[in-house]
Amino acid sequence: KDEENKTPLHYAALGGHSAAIQALVDAKADVNVTNQWRQSPLHFAAIRGDRASLQVLIDNKAIVESKDYDRVTPLHYAASQGNSACVQLLLDAKAHADVKDHDKSTPLHGAAGRGHATVMQVLLEAKATVDARDYWKKTPLHYAAWLPQSTSAEVLIEAQADVDAENGSRQTPLYNAAIVGPTDTLKVLIHARATVSVEDKWGQTPLHVSVRCKQSEVIRLLLDSLLTSES
Image (cartoon, helix red, strand yellow):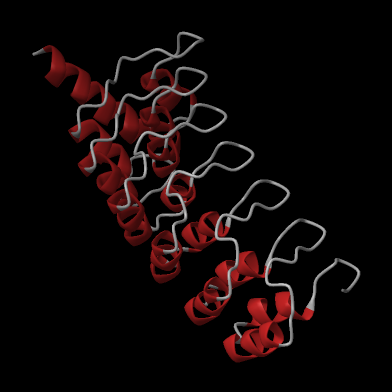
């Protein structure tokens, strides 16, 4: 092991060298050995996004739901990296779609916050909970709402995500979108009938937020939505 407790198997996995992985395993290398952050070679293969390396490790009894120091699993890493083939492989190997890390985030949270729509669809097909809550009571849609492009939000809304889900501060995804600006995501949320007049724990609405952030186009869109809902 090196100074970080990484073994040759860790390096082979991080480098995407599936043949080297098999050779090391044949030489009795421990497939579930961990470094100082409790990361296994399977974690490293997921970070690398190398399906062949993942397959060799899984075939040799790697623990699919191995958790590192922050309770992050290989599926979390693969989802955050946007590698749908690796995500599918891990799910086929019985990784749990709703596995939670230290912050109670699921792989769907990670994929949604990075705009990985294909990975999100793979996870949802595997019965991932669309409105899963993390430590801050945020759903994947809260994270998707930070993105200018609307694809993530559209995937979640099509899967029946609650557009008015409240986080620990009673803020809905619309608050996040109002801060970012007049994006496609904001328009998708409004079109999905997200409540514009909802108040958070401090009595602030998305309209208050948009005024504070000087988002004039967002203000117009929110006011138009309010007028439409009242007519």
